[in-house]
Amino acid sequence: MATRRSPQKPLLSPQKDILVADEEGGEEEESLIEETIDDVKKLEKKAYRMNNRSCSIIVIVTLMALIYMSMTCFLQQDDNNEILLQTGGLRTTGSKSSEDQQCTIWLAASSLKGHPGMGVFTTRDIRKASLVIPKGDGIAIPLYGVHRNTKEPNEKERSQMMEVWHDYIWSINKPDHISYEEFDGLSSYFPGYASLTNHHCTLQSLKQRYLPPFYDDSLVNRFQDPGAGAFSYDAGRGNYFTRDVEAGDELFLNYGYCEHGKAPEWGEHAFMPDDFLQAANVIFQLVWKSLRLEGDKMVYEPPKDLPISDDANDLVVQLLPKDAKELQEMRSVGGSMDDLIWYLARYKGLKHHETEWIQRNGICLENFAPGKSTIHQAGNGGIAQLHITKGDIVVPVPLLQVMDKEALAIYESTDKGEKEWKEIGKQLLLNYCWGHSESRLLLCPQTNAVLLNHCSERTKECGSEGPNAEIRWASDWHTSTKSWLEMSLDQMAKETTGGLAFDIVALRDIKPSEEIFIDYGTEWERAWKDHVDSWKPAQSEAHVKDSWISAKEANDNREETLKKFTTNNLREVSSNHTYLFTGCHYWVDKQDEHEFYNQKNKNWTNFSDEDIIKT
Image (cartoon, rainbow, N blue to C red; front, side, top):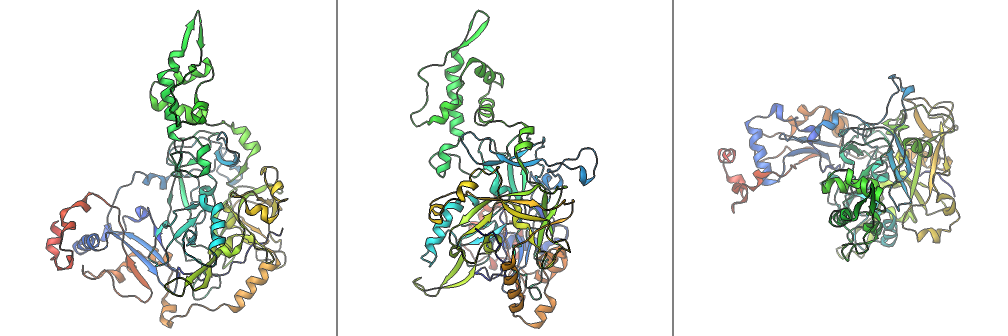
C-alpha cells in the first residue's frame, strides 16, 4: 500500500473563502476598542445589542481573499486570562540551552481500565492554568457538510466515513468560529491533542481555547501565490490545564458524554460520574460498617447484598474495595463524598503508570511545534523543539481511514428539490491525508504530522541534503497495524475505528529550530507542478489587488482598519467595502434581560441616541 500524500492543491469550496471567528473567542482582543471608545461608539454598542445581539466587530473577506479580524467592543474579565501568560511543555535540566530540553508529553498505552487504546501523559508536575505547548495545538481543518442529511451523490461514502470519524470532529454542525456564510454544517477536525487525548468527566485536566492569531492568512497572497487555499489558515486550540497534574498522570478532556445511554458505544464501557457516585454511596452506607476490629487486626467482610440500583452496571462493582487494606486506604483519603469519588476515579478507575514506564514505552509528542515554514507557499511547518537523534521516532502517526475519497467531494444542489447536484470542490482535509492515485483509500493523521512539508533529493526545496525524516509503518508501539495490513479493503470497511499507524523517523540528527521534512513522492511533485503551471489568481478589480492586505495585517493595524468601518452613526454599522464586511457577536449577560430590549417596538432605529444611552 503506497503512502504518498495528496498534493497541496488550492481547493475552491462553498465556503467562498470566507473566514469564521472563534466561538469562545475575542477575550484576547477585548481591550482593542476600550482605549479609543467614545460616546458614539458606546451608542453603537447599544445598537448592536438591539439589532444584531452582538458586540464584536469581525472583518471578513467575501470572494476575493481569506481575511479575518475580531475586535470586541467592551471589556469582560475571564478567569482563564492568566493562561496566556504561562506555558507548559518542555522542561530543562538546569541550562536554558535547547540541547538540554527534555520531552515531558508522551503518547503511551492509556491508563483507563478496559481501554485498549493510547493516551497522552505527562512526566513532570504541571501547575493549573499552564499551556501544554505555548503556540497552540497546530491547525484546525474545516469540514463542510459532513453531517448533513441531504441526498447528495456521495451520501453513502460520507456516512461510511463518519462511522469512523464521528468522535474526532469537534463542534458538529456548529463552527469553532462564527460563520457568516450560507453553507451549513461547518465543523472542525483537530489533529493533535484534541484528537489523541481521552475522555474523562471526573478527571478532566485539560480545556481548550484559541490563542491569537485565531486565523492567519498572511503567509500567502491570494493574488500572487498558487499555494493560497492549499492549507488551513485556522489555528488549532490551545490546551491548558484546569487543575494541577502530577508526573505520570494521563491527561483528559471532557467530550461532553457524562451519562450512560447518552454516550457513543464506547461510553457504555467507560466509568461515568454516576458510577463513582453510586459506588461512593454504597461504601458510605454499608461497607464502612463491614470493617471491624478483631483483637489488634482490622477485618473486612464484603457484604453479600450491596445496595446497588438495578440499573447499575458492573463498573460500579469494580469500584468497591476488595479487601480491608483497600478499604482503609479509602477511609484515609478524607471524610467527604467528593474526596472518596476522587479516590475512586483516580485509583480504582485507572492503572497508574510510573514516569520511567512512560518514558520507556511511550513516544514523545513534543519533538516539534508549529512554525512558519522555510518553504514559500507551504504555510506553516513542523519546527524541531528538541534534539532528535537519527533513527528516533519524530512523531507517532495514528491514522483514521476514509475508505472512499469520494466522501470528501462537496456538492451543491442545482434545483430546489435537491434532485440535481454538481460537484463544486473538495474538502481541504484531502490535502492532509495520504493516498494513491490507483486507490480510493485515504489515511489521515491524528497528530501534528500534518504540519510536515515536502522536500526531496530530486527537487531539494530544503537544501542539498534533502529530507531529514521519512514515513514508515508503525513499529511495535501500535499493536493493530500489523494485523490491519493483512486485511482486505472490504474487511477494513467494516471497522468503525482507526487501526493503522505510521512512524515518522529521523534520517539524520535534527537540531532544535530545524524544520522537519518528508518526501511526498514523485506523484505529488507532478501534481504540484501541474497545479502551478495552470494556476490563475482570483479575478478582481486592479485596485483591489493592489490594496489587498491579509487579515493578519488588518489585525495588526487595528486602529486604521477600524476607522474605515466606523460610521459614527447607529443606523449604519459599517461603510461599504469592496471585499470586507462587518458582523457582531458578544457574550450574553444580565443586561440582555432589560425590558428595553424586549419592547414590542422592535424598530429601535426610531429611538433617539439619548434614549438608548439612558438604558
